[in-house]
Image 1 (cartoon, rainbow, N blue to C red):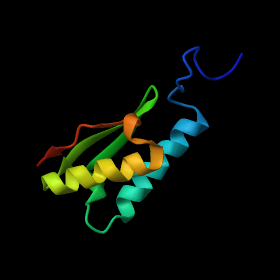
Image 2: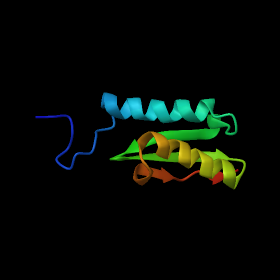
Image 3: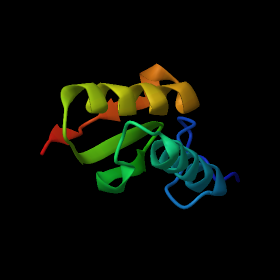
Image 4: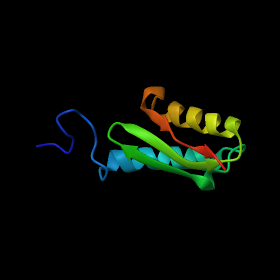
Length: 83
């Protein structure tokens, strides 16, 4: 038996999931035009979910693009709000 479900989605505690979360968190943290401290990254099945808040719509869109560059645009659910 493998660690993935029959549909191929990863369980939240697998190393691959943790590595993906870390990669996106790190990319957001080093982005010069985003305050990544207020953005939270989680894995939901086969997609990355961004939540939290940023100051502008441009920052929100940029955070989504950064995550998409790491894990693929179809796998990003950007729920960040302005705040």
